[in-house]
Length: 528
Image 1: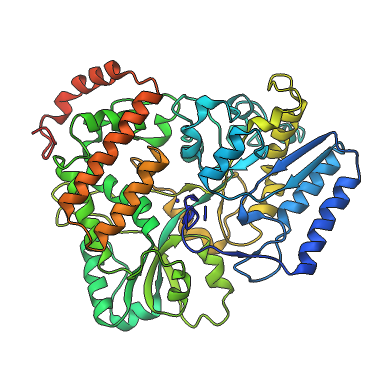
Image 2: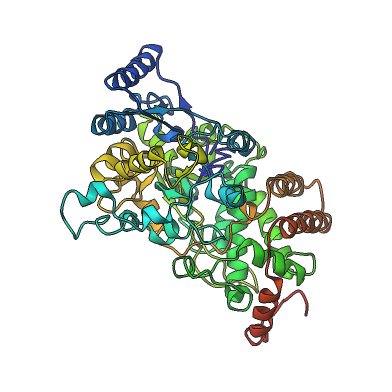
């Protein structure tokens, strides 16, 4: 769900991620000073031959108070202290950097990025040719030494570090288009509809099973004086696009999913990569001539009429807890906010978005909604990690950086970090899911999405789409004009990708021709 450019980058799943007004308030001055002092004391216990900088993301930032409730976080700091005891020549410095691509690119291009950084992996994919990130395949395919030393050959991680990760489809599916893995999917995030059970009972509506029932129920909630659904423009531009796209295009995937990456395909079970989308665009898909594409945006506009007036509103948490909104589409970190509120005054629950049927669309795939969440904190190792020698093959520091990540995924260490409070779901085998997050665990068992549309192209594309989408959703521009903007935007993004990357168009053309029989009886293709 990242869950977090991905939640509002996570309000902008990183200002879910990830999704949904996930605000971390600073600790009280005395507590913050104490946390810093503990870090200095740990560093001073040994001479630091290696200084590792780690940007863990705000979910685990030592000293932070999630939603301003409870005690400051200490889990990661405690694990780091144990790591430094194990390696007395190493000091780990925790730093907090903005989850904004422009800032991260500046740091990476100047060689001043943290050694371990939390970046949405789809952003990493666009930069793998620049040498900023360290491929992790060799480490993931080797044993985790901290598991190996325990001597149990049946333990996940004894033979391969890979085996320790619970959500294999998502974790292994994060391989870049060059076939290499740059990402540790540290935990999992997923979105859902949080709903007010008291309002549902009062109005006489229930958890919907189809899209039509959902819209009908929202009309009743609106008539009763409630805002039926709280959403942000980011949720529309990202999650909503992906889910509706999947509902309309999943049935035709056999004829248009032209390339299957041997590493990722068995986990993703169908996914349209950037080169496939570029090729399909050249065939007329995702243009005004593509009826599925036009229908995607029509369904989105129909949904928008039941949402909060201001889609840029960053205070949707407040609107939900004050019972102005009956439902709230956001990510699982909100769970802690609701659980910790002793004055909430209503019972709440979560459900996932209901499926399209043929009553919704003639192109409905008649399949359950797919997963759009996935990796929450996504840790990459940057080229700063081998700045001791400038060569990853000879760098002792890089080996110690990898050791830190391996140490953090040992179950007893990992649980102290991820399960300190209900936020993200564990992605290490053997670490229990906190009871309040179990509904999200069930959602994550679904099939993964067909595409991550706004992460396929460059930042310019996604920002233009979001600006024009907000104008369209607020009746500032008609559908035909919006589709013209989208076509121009996609044309520019496609030209940019094709100019920067080596695309085997001949191979795509051969696969397109080979799959022609699979498209023969398909209705609504853009070249009909």
